[in-house]
Image (cartoon, rainbow, N blue to C red; front, side):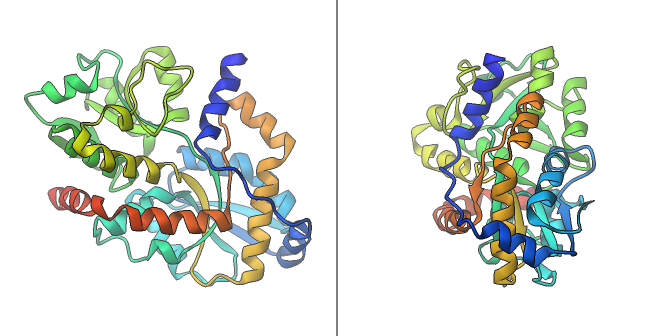
Amino acid sequence: MKAMRRKMVFAGALAPAVMGIPGRGQAQASNYYKDKIVNINVAGGPSGGHTRYARLIQPYLQKHIGAREVRITNMPGGGGLKAANYIWRAKPDGLQIFFGNVSTLILAPLAGSPGATFDSTKLTYLGRATSEPRVLAVGGKSAIQSIQDVQKLKRPFVYPSQGTDEDFYTMAVLADAFGFKVKAVTGYEGNADTALAVIKGDGDGHITGWSESLGPIRSGDKHPILMVTSQKSPDFPYIPVVTEIAPAPKRATARAMANILETHRSYIGPPGMDPQAVAAFRAAVTAALKDPALLEETRKGERPVAPMEGARQQKVIEEITRASASLSPILKAAVKEIQ
């Protein structure tokens, strides 16, 4: 139980403090969304981590937003780009919302991805649900036991990928930082699919969220060799952190990537979203993520939340996007290589 609590603290430590919401926020939520149906478009398949979080939060979001129904719709494709493009074109009335990784929305335009038809800085950020480290893990029986072993490979590191999502781009940045070649094998659907490939030995390793890898790591099916974040886990201090061990000339690039990844799973609306809907949805997200019943569920399921209020998140995304321009050449080269 103590270790479980420490894991939750670790995930939350990556998040800036949640900003307060005026007391009238929940009244706005009830008034604006009363008798309406809200559709949460999840950027991934039904078995993925985004869906598990979206369904975990859904009843609490419905409770605090005052809507007649909050529906979950899976919209896999393009590593999250299909759902993002859909929201970009959606009517800005707050009834169609994206749920998925913000990092993909920042990275895809920087990479010049032809699949990204949106401007990530003009989307409406409604609140982050969680921020957890991304971990590079190999198969439990793999001869690769460290990032140094990857550097010594006399062949490309084979990477099962579900598309040009944040993990694909992260691998490109790691390959550039540590000086190894990578071969992305696309066509996989979600973390469960890529994890199975790694465990079976069909690929060398993959990057995924910490909560998604914790079970296979405990069972010995996977072995973590690097965390792409800014601080070590108090429970797994032996896993190196990219911002500490990246070669000095590449450390700023590694830090920029870690900052982007820590934006993580969030609710996002279309550009120009109705101000009343924005205020109501942001208030409801904040209230839902503070709900004691939800927090008890996250504790039992080891799926911690690490909220960031939407107005603060909007500013953070703009700042991170401006500061990450140096990543663009690396990301563009990665996309070009798989086209």
